[in-house]
Length: 155
Image (cartoon, rainbow, N blue to C red; front, top):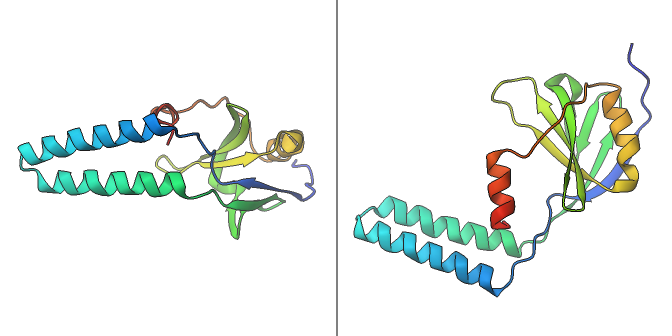
């Protein structure tokens, strides 16, 4: 039997803003230049194009401020902006704390499905966990290799 859910709404940024000092940008350009020289030496022009596009993409993403997104949990699922993620798409959820930020991660049923990561303010955490727990089992979640790399590189 599933408990009836009241609507829970909150607003949060779409991702964590990380500090980038001058040395971070210098390191980015040194690594980009080294890989660029390697690509020219190997005459790997496609690799060179990918390096240039990657550097540009990383720079754009560091300067773009995160959007504030409105979230809500109701009897059907999680609404993220205007998109509904139904509970039936997920097998479990977990809570993760990164630095001082909390997030709920919805784990998909499909083997190659994408998980959904939603940040929330600490004050709303108990209500959000209770609402998700009424519909999905809770599992321990950890950062995967890609998430650890992104955190280490402060992207």
